Length: 284
Length: 277
Image 1 (cartoon, chains in turn blue, cyan):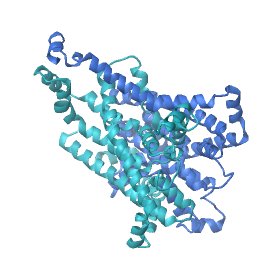
Image 2: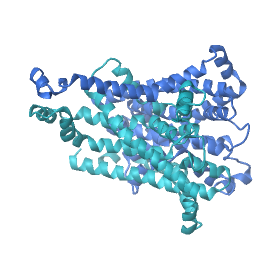
Image 3: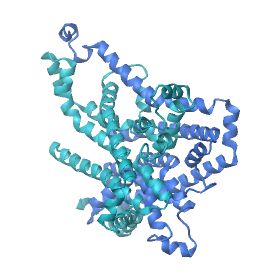
Image 4: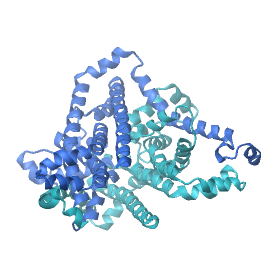
């Protein structure tokens, strides 16, 4: 059969049109069933009683506090990981030192750690009898079961993003222009701000976007470090989880739709930035 | 490289910047990891073994590996097919779909869980129908596989896609010219080029699945010896104060997911060395 069609169309791809359409249908159908239909079910659930109850659910003080806490933690974690991520990327690309390969590998470690295990690690280190916690607790500094722990957890899970996205663009960019600026008398900061930073901006922006998206959605590590306390400080994801546990379905659904909406916007941002980074890399 | 380090920026600022970066890495990553390793091992191998093989922990570990294994088998096939369709064929809506592939990476896991509950849960029409016919998904083991399939959906696709794009198609065309049908061409010519990418994608997905919590906890129902996975067991033991039990299962899962990533990294480096990139 293949040879018959082959006689009319000498390119390999046009051989089995029905097989091709079957495959396309299967692939698109799988995507729809696995991803799109559940997403639509969530939206349908959130708006089951109309738009007003949806907005009411988001307007409760608990929901608003949860989103404010999520945004605060996201902002702080992103700032911290942007600064240290940039420093780390510069060190890994521009410097040579003993143990560099190990350090390079360790940066990716948070990607391999389950959020629950990340939370457990923080409890072990910063809890009452932990290695650092035993020094902090007597001074009245509470990390675990308090917001600093939630911040640390978010910083941990998002640590690799900026480093990983900045390294390739920094490597691509090279040092020639920096050397020129430096030779012309620009100081180190001046060189960094006006030469290095502008040339790595898209890669950096992509890394920051990934960090923000992941911070907004972090759940497991926060659940562990926030403890199982009724009326605990909640982030948006904890609010969703606790809402389902306590039969506050309206609140959980509404907050989920808002989180999903924000992550959808972040995804579009990522797509645009990735294209920028790729086109920049091919131009260079 | 000596030329690079001569650069103006790095000449004097080298040491402080490196010290700060490494200190940050040490404090944020190495210290917590070391604390977990030391405290999990401290009570000795016998205590470790006892915690690992207690029936509840053992079942949770087995369930995690089994569900991740099933997920990976499905993803290897569907992911490769999806990458293939997205690279080789054009159809209406292809661009939109390609942009939406990473959606599972962007959506918070807990929201993913709620999406699945909304569709298949006991209060939905579909969930009630499935439950009545003995095919319940939510609060059952299939729900766990479904959640894992959702959160790991992009891995194989994003790993296979670039290889397919860069692939030299003259060999496939030669095979077709010599009379091989589509399937034979795929099996004998395309697949041998693709399998390292398929393996990479599935390994990443497997590693991720070993630690998945947010989506699974929403759909699994948390029944010990039935739907409680490794990460859920760890959480339960932390809550009930058995910290060593939590650390032991954490150490097992972490060793496996780290091991997978390290082996993968080695293989990729060797591959790059062979191909001379």
